[in-house]
Image 1 (cartoon, rainbow, N blue to C red):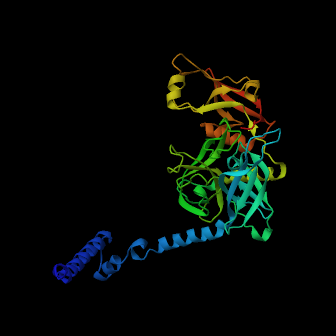
Image 2 (tube, rainbow, N blue to C red):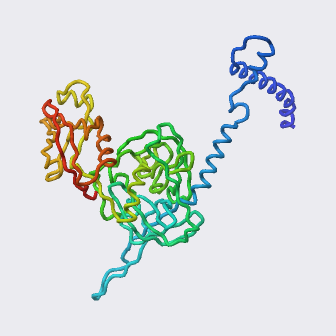
Image 3 (spheres, rainbow, N blue to C red):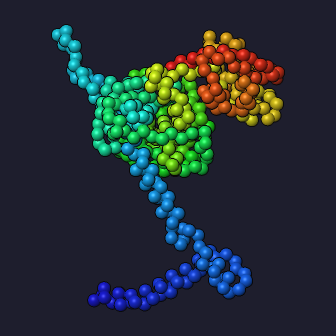
Length: 408
């Protein structure tokens, strides 16, 4: 009975609720409608104009359909890669060798490059593997052999023996055309969850990341030292987590613009900042890995840092000075042979002196990333480049014969 007594006011509540909703709707319409002028007929016509999202959500439906189409198109190209390493089953006794067998130790992602069975992934995904197993989107598995590696761009190529008709290569876009704010899609296997898709935007372009940073392969026997940088890296807020490495970052046409490689996170999981190796680098490196098994990078033999306003003050430079301060010079390296001068530090740890690179082959250099990008995209080992430097306040031209970058 008490329940019924409570509910007997329901018709009144519904009526009052309807009145309030109508009032609110009228208020919202009045707020959204443009200021009208002219005849009542014109005013009525203007009052019916509403944003797409209000009148039917056609824009949202179109975007959703696009995402669905991208997933259907590209997910068959993305694979799960599991690596195994030999682990001893026991200790050697009586002069006999201890037995061992491959044990799964890590996994990541990859994608089909061509109909010959070549699959691209990150070098850090397969580093240290004794056995590589590929699982396709339909659940088919196949062993893979290592074809080539390039630790300095964190790329690797493996190959499976699978019929060409069963392979769906990705389509590759030009990453030089990527713009900040562009919508992106990432597909991979975070935490082993196959075929996971996330979305976001391009947060920044022309980043550089250190080789070896973010390595989630705990089995690696040759933990790389981050001595070198990968240029032109794409930053995205699309969720990228351990296991996404080696997968795909796509534009809204479903074309590859980058290969997720690292995340910036204090916890080791996604915090909104992920980095992908640009497709232009992938397109240069992968064919060489397939044909030669390796890729030769140009090497200047320095470490450097972008000149900031703070450095301008500390070094006593002209206000507004830009360029790259030479922090260290590798002994017997190309820069050392050209007698470039590195900065030193005073008793307080502040930089003192050092050459400032302001140009290379006539191209202006304002950031460290500019220098790394030029070396990768426009030079090769053995090539002579002309550096424009600032030394003791005087501009000079220095010729440097580039070497071959050591393996990180």
